[in-house]
Length: 336
Image 1: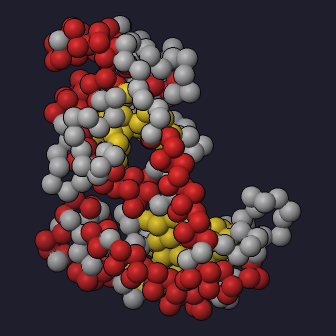
Image 2: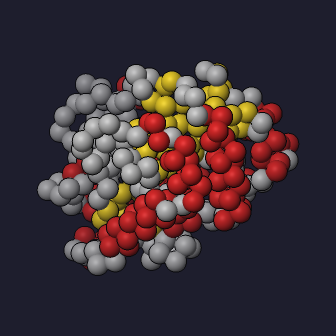
């Protein structure tokens, strides 16, 4: 019998860490250990380093130095290291950022997290995707099943591997360790409320909301929103409303200078992020806007990928650390 193996993208792990900081050796070695093993044998996830921009939180891009995320769960949740002081350390706990807005500390350290994976510690928790799966599920990217190996006792194999790395005494001690939940969930909840309030009162977004008054949601439910997207790449611009697909709207030219001003203001606040290329935003019944910025994806303008030279012009004007330059922009040295 054959199985689909884990998707392991070891080469992506540095992206999850701040510039100048390399992934811990234990994480890289775990990626090597996991590679080729059957998906689900020690939890259901994809191992891939990513930026906090991808996390299901408000203003994730502003928290890039606070998180090093390396596991994607099937429901859209992300797991990784949290750096409370903005600097990775051996004391960085492993946390989960849930797709429904929940946040939890999963283990007090990376080695503690791996020990819990090996002990099936997440089976009866809200994070049960981290527990072994008994189902022969299809891997989303359908990799070559010929490379997979039989399930066997993967958690036991992981425990034996960890015991060689950290010693049996520390392994047993970490297995019994209860993570501290007193700080992280509260801090994330406070961050969400703070940023939602910040954007609700932001003068540029308030002005955009007034211009878009004709598009206020007509539903009676307080959660109804009208959703928009805009792309700015160099001199190019496009804005659309989501209404039976993406549609143009007459106010798009009027909000362009405001979006460009917002883009420049955010660059001034955190120059290392550079200039975002795309924003999706939701307009509520009060005219308040909650945005989500994309600094990394290659946006489409006019239905085709935006010209790379236009994006490189943005990069020259607002350079980023090489690690934060997306692959589609090519060599950052050449681009600069």
